[in-house]
Length: 285
Ligand SMILES: NC(=O)c1ccc[n+]([C@@H]2O[C@H](COP(=O)([O-])OP(=O)(O)OC[C@H]3O[C@@H](n4cnc5c(N)ncnc54)[C@H](O)[C@@H]3O)[C@@H](O)[C@H]2O)c1
Image 1 (tube, rainbow, N blue to C red):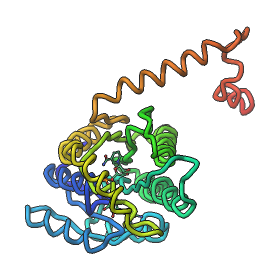
Image 2: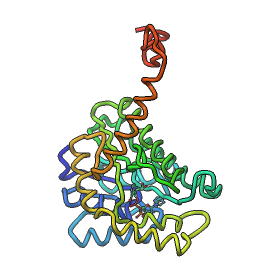
Image 3: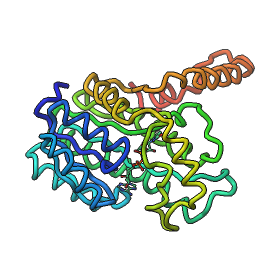
Image 4: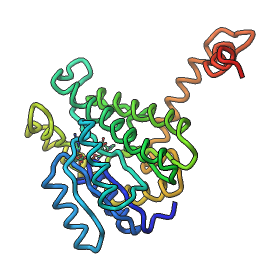
C-alpha cells in the first residue's frame, strides 16, 4: 500500500507503541486519528504531532465499549472522508502468577486485550469489506503470543495468543484487498508497566511500578518498532517481527510440538481427522 495521503486510526494511540505508530504514519504522509481511553492524553499527543505538521485528530474511546468503537469509526470517516488503515493496538497488562490472578483484573484484561481488539477489527473490517476498498488491519500482539514465556504474565500471554488466533483465521476469511498484519513486540519503551492506572482497582503498586519502569526503560525505542511495523503493514506482511531473540523461543516451541506429534502412533491415513478435509466431505465439493 502506498501510504502517502491515506488515513489511519490507532487505538491506544496516546502513549507508547500507539503514539509511535501514529508518529511513523504521519512521517509517511498519513492523516491519523489517535483514539484512547485517556482523552486528555490523546488530545496532547495529537497536538504534539500537529505541531510537526501532521493532520492528526484525537478521539476519546474505550475499546471495551462496542458503541464507542462504532462512534470512533463514524468520527474517523467524517473527519477524513475515508479510512484505509486501522491499528488495534490498545492493550493492558497486570502481573501475577496464573492461579493468583486477581478476579477483578480478569474481565478487564480480557475486555481490553481480546474484546477491544475484536470490537476494532470487526467494526472497521466490515466497513472496509462493504466499501470493497484496499485496506490494512494491524493488531498488536506480543512476543508472548509465540512462545516467549512471561512468568507472572500468564493471563496477558493468554490474551496475546487469542489475538494471534483471531488474526490467523481472519486473514483467510477477508477478501484479498484487505491485509491483516500482526506485530510481535518484545520489550519496548512505553507505559505498559503502569497499565493498572486504567484498571478497576486503580494505579499499579509503587514497588511494581518502579521495577516495571526500570525493565521497560531497557526496551526498544518505540519509534524504531513503529517504523518497522508501518513498513510491514505497507508490504502486507502477516507477521511483523521486531526483536530477533524471539526465534530461539519460537524454535523451542516448534521442537516441542514436533516431538509430541512424532510420538502419536501411526495412522493408515494421517489426514483422516484433518478438519478442513472432514468439513469438505460433509459439505461436499
Ligand atoms: N511495551 C512492550 O514491551 C510491549 C510488548 C509487547 C506487546 N505490547 C503491546 O503493545 C500495545 C501498546 O502498549 P504499550 O506498550 O504502548 O503500553 P502503554 O501503556 O504505553 O500504551 C497503551 C495505551 O492504551 C491505552 N488504553 C488502555 N486501555 C484502553 C482502553 N480500554 N481503550 C482504549 N485505550 C486504552 C492507554 O491509555 C495507553 O495510552 C499493547 O497491546 C501491549 O500489550 C507492548
